[in-house]
Image 1 (cartoon, rainbow, N blue to C red):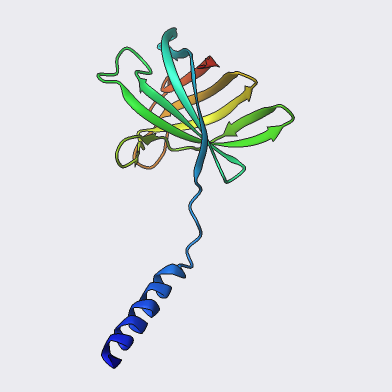
Image 2 (spheres, one colour):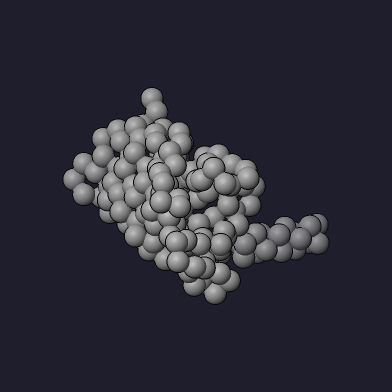
Length: 165
């Protein structure tokens, strides 16, 4: 009987060690909304327009929003469609949310999100207001140390869409 009590006490002590985790909590995603609209990418001097859905995830961290581009081909030359996550800074202003950011590494979304370091996102400027999402940014092809690959590898990109009901 004494051995059983000791085992129970050891189990409770071990459980309490796991329960007292000192790591900062990760932001929990709340309020995902989906917006459908037109994505325009300027590539080789011409606008390439495609229909795209973007899911918007606000996090409990009040200044953070994630834009998830669903099954997107930014330009016709892309061989496959990808899910791309772009974390941006967000500031709530009255009835809208202002989006901004620069020097952002996008992520390939999947079972495990992984950085997509071939591109950098700069000059994010946009807003979510009522039932619409409007955002513009520069997608920049970069090398392994983050430098722009070559002249002409900055692709102005903009999205205008409405919330799916």
